[in-house]
Length: 171
Image (cartoon, rainbow, N blue to C red; front, side, top):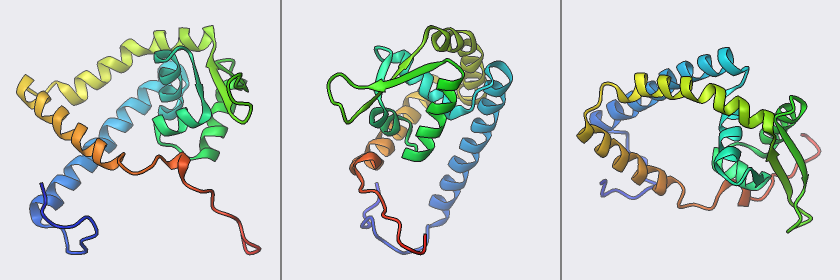
């Protein structure tokens, strides 16, 4: 762990820079492979797949806020993506029975069927591109490291809790 404060403006040292670039490149390469598979097999973007998979893994229903926090996506972008999924018959939207201010998104039978159809190929891509070169020990270490980093990054309030930026006359 680094001993420097989080707002430290010093340049990254060579090890940090190397690790950052490797992580960034791995993320981009994996994202490209996953996106290619999802588009070819299901006509979905990665975000759309994440939304459907999140709904499928829950009781089939989540609020827009829960979805936004889970996939780390902007409110407007999420609204657009859910609208596309709704138009395709993969989800429905409606008021939450528990909170009239919340919009509840539910996965349809067609959405579940699509997830079930493309999930095996998705797993093959992730396993083949990310996990294949790793030993069991490597996987344990990677999981521990990524969990620590994720928890550190998520220690701040979720993006949905942030105030909306007000548009001024120049916007």
